Amino acid sequence: MRYLESANDLRADQLRSGFFEGWPNPPDPDTHLRLLRQSDRIALALDEQSDTVIGFATALTDGVLAAFVSFLEVLPAWRGRGVGTALIQRLVASIEPIYGIDVICDPELQPFYERAGPFRPGTAMIARSYAHQSGQAGAASGD
Ligand SMILES: CC(C)(COP(=O)(O)OP(=O)(O)OC[C@H]1O[C@@H](n2cnc3c(N)ncnc32)[C@H](O)[C@@H]1OP(=O)(O)O)[C@@H](O)C(=O)NCCC(=O)NCCS
Image (cartoon, rainbow, N blue to C red; front, side):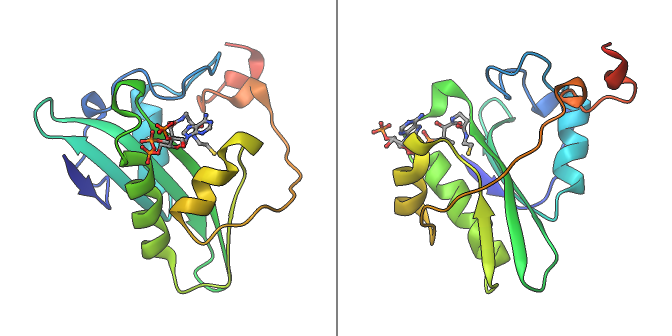
């Protein structure tokens, strides 16, 4: 296992399907790679044996006061071994020091984030356009 903080040298074929679990209309590997490259901070977990990414975390930040953890996911076969904790800790370390780091999660994951980083429960408002879930141009037409 190797951790990376850049996707510059990553290829789309190193991003297996299996990420975006439960999404009806998930991004394809090329779009996933674009998402990683265009995020302000990332942490990747790479399985060296298969040369594939098995976990990723991304954040967006203004670099002044605010940061937002946009994604954290570990492939199901690799869960429960500390990879998710390592990814969020590496991501937070790459952002700090900063005033605020926000992450939106389901209530059952709040203990995970409290254990893994400087997080405490808060409240949030969200907007989602499911027609754009794949991240593909033209997806809004329902393609
Ligand atoms: C959340 C996630 C990244 C954790 O990755 P991981 O590599 O398994 O994390 P760790 O091994 O460091 O920690 C595992 C612990 O997190 C907690 N945890 C993980 N998922 C949980 C869930 N859905 N509900 C409650 N607790 C959960 C448990 O305490 C778990 O310990 P256990 O394996 O002994 O039950 C992974 O489960 C995942 O990718 N889930 C689907 C995507 C997701 O929910 N991402 C978070 C978006 S906010």
